[in-house]
Length: 284
Ligand SMILES: [Zn+2]
Image: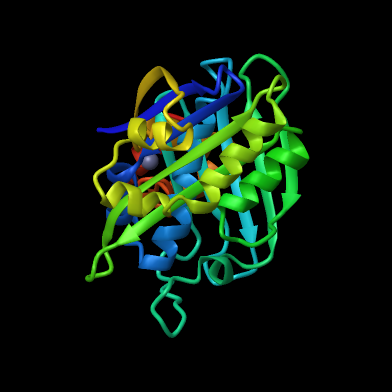
């Protein structure tokens, strides 16, 4: 099981969230048959979503992230709540690299927008869109927090691949600057961030999220919480039946008259559901 740790640091001037999302991203790679550049992009967004659900005060908030770029990966959709994270991208088969073999995530995502929708279940949902600044995901989210939520935030997200092009590890961290934060604390952290290894290298060195938080905070952190994070799809036959019901009686009657089974595949987990004409008759 993957772990996310939450901490305060520098006398509560900063809040730090760090996670190891290796199993979660490996699972997404497996069910979606992701090629490396697609796996890197979707893996970073899945990791971010796991962190973002923990930023919410209300435990019940559902977060939907849409990254709509004009690159070959196409639309990336990720949904997260307290039960877990799920997501998919339009094109799972992107393997775009430079001459040195470095994955070109920014180019594969392209220019476009980042949208975050927060469903508080009882209140009106909150939705905010900003432009992608690089398509590399982490700095797009840092920009989003700055623009849309007016919070000064540093974000790092990474997915590392082995020689076979399969996910080796994945993780991320987010540093939030609290209103009482001193200028000197910010410069200290900026120096640490300028010199720290990429998150995937830290994980490859065997560091845990707690170790990474201590590195980021110069050992001033106080760990507040430890949470399990995982890939979770909540689809069911019932839920898809409700979707068919919303098409209306005329449409459903035509489907029944066709006499064929209807097959629906869940975009988030690729599970297939078969609906027979008898299943559909119950909807009328
Ligand atoms: Zn599903």
